[in-house]
Length: 193
Image (cartoon, rainbow, N blue to C red; front, top):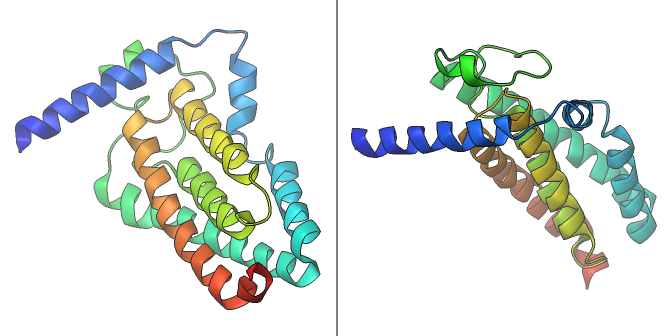
């Protein structure tokens, strides 16, 4: 078992380093913006407007509440149940690995498993995919692309390993799907029929 974990860890390091070192100075500002927490507020508002467009005010308000609940859960669980428990160093804190990285915009906190950015985006995306699934086929590709872009940016910037992003995405997918399922069955079921 230890050998398997070692092999996975080596692969994770290699893949993360390859993504990070593929970066270029002219793309750095773009990926800093993609990782920015305030950058995506217009996107969140657009998604909520889509819910309003297809369902109305009541469902939009419930979507807003469900989205806030989802983001609160993914953020707090990613920190308290993972980062503080596993204490896996971010790549930019892990020596000698850190010496090979392009750290583009600071390192962030000490621990990186799981990525809160990935958990938050995957949670919100999976929630909204479930809410909008019967109304537009664009929700899935747009929200999936957004998740991949934000996750990639975290590795690009040198603040997370690929494994941190994948695990964070899975956590967010689980939480968002759970909240989305409750939302669908309790609040929107009559609208879908």
